[in-house]
Image 1 (cartoon, rainbow, N blue to C red):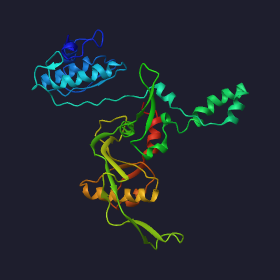
Image 2 (image 1 turned 90 degrees about the vertical axis):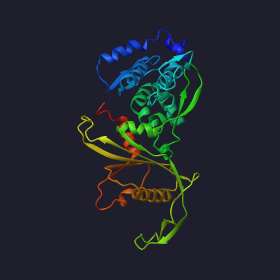
Image 3 (image 1 turned 180 degrees about the horizontal axis):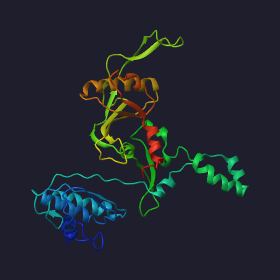
Image 4 (image 1 turned 180 degrees about the vertical axis):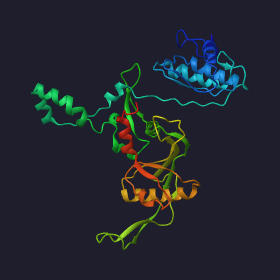
Length: 341
């Protein structure tokens, strides 16, 4: 009946009543903290916690996990409707002044099948013929070489070259209950935040820039280089500019094994789209960095992550102690590092 009132009836069998879950959560006597439901179903636990927070001004948070098709058709709509109003009938809200301030983020994880479907193998007819003719060689090749070497660069194993465009990373994904395959973008920006355990404080909107360039004589350059590329004037924001930047500020625990000891490492992440012109790309990064350092009151970061080869360490002032790390290297390390898992 509860799902029918929300206009979601008949889409899932045997949903639990949210009042039962609400009573169970209330019995914990905690108005904050995390609640995990690894078999979320129709989202009963989520609605119960939303309603409970509404009733007692609590700040309980939840993580729901579900693999069924009703994730999109029932669970997500149920949470949205529960936030908007506490009373529904035949899919329409009975009250419009009982909504609460709430937001939730939902993620779709890459499946094991998606990983396999995105493996790409180097083509080598001579090798294939030799391996096919020797069973023992084939076994050794498959176990010790194929997945380690021949699949390098596959999207599902992290294609470093694709980091040149943070918004363009994609996987070929099989649609549920179908033999059809579609191309889906992967949010590597968000993925990186999770990999390093970032507590996001501010995530800026993307900005695009353009600039004019010129070359000036520079006596400090080697003999085979007589001029230095510089920006003629200032970099300018341009909706169609080729240089795209997005910055994220936050912090990570200095000790991952004890994240609540109060010791924090302040982090700045700079994502950019690379044009293929290394000299111009790095010059634009330098100019963008200088511009943002001036506009940021408290530029006291411990670590700065940037995608693509860069010259940022050369811009460090004498009284600054931040270090620069390549996103690609850190991403690869965290992808396969299981030390804290």
